[in-house]
Image (tube, rainbow, N blue to C red; front, side):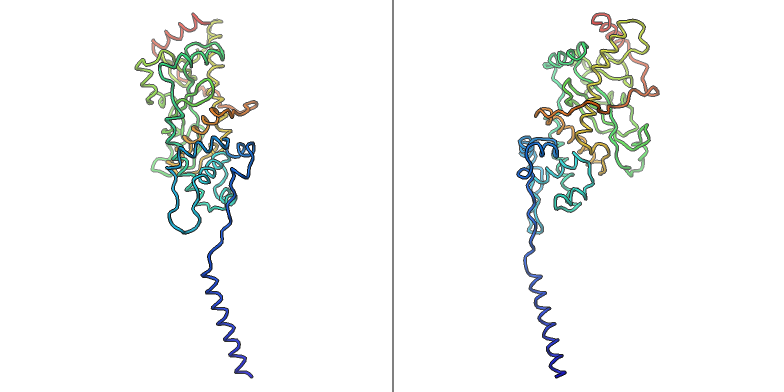
Length: 351
């Protein structure tokens, strides 16, 4: 009896081992991912991804060829549409990637790859969606800006804004520390009267001065060359030039005060643009990515912002926090004679 019991136990062990081998040969079953295009209605979709379904599908057709597709049979390939939506959700919310992965049945590394690939793909559309007006169209821009507060000949408003980033971890990380004592990229942008970006520069660290970024830009070269009749409006951190007018320090008469009021009311368009942009894409509150990916994310958010405005999805800007006012310590008190002469002409003949 004792020998039989041992044999019976041995047979049970063998059966368990064989069943385990068979179970390991079975195909894995994966959960079917939910399709946001089908699951959400139009309003819910816009709240989560900042664009309509039609605008998102159109965007997908333009960047699909930039997005990778898995050619192996390992795991589940992430379709381009889902890659785009995961990245857009990240930009809209700024949530940690592991949280987005849990909500999308994806791993954090997969979310990271989606963000990296999609932001780079959308950034390639910058020249299509972020365009400074040609000289032939500047009259149209002048009329639109003049309707705001009566300032003539304006073709754009320029300013800089700091996008917080993680420490770059480079030999000279302090270059990225801005005057507010956090690491950032100082983004220069120009907008039109409808708060669309017409020029964007994202190559400078947080310690760079706004005026230096502008004078080093291709846009400044074009304006200096006399390609345009109109001018930009900038705050007191910029030097006065014929193609960039700044406020008057300590105005002494009513005409100068009227000029300043018109200048401020018109120039705040770029501040409202920054406010809407950062509210629409919360990731801009603090981008936690490699520097190359961070730049692509910033450009991609600007492209998506313009697409949203073109598609008719403005945000309510009441009670919105705008950029801080001019820093007295960084105000530029100089300009050239040509800039002074043009500003005086505007003051005398239009105010």
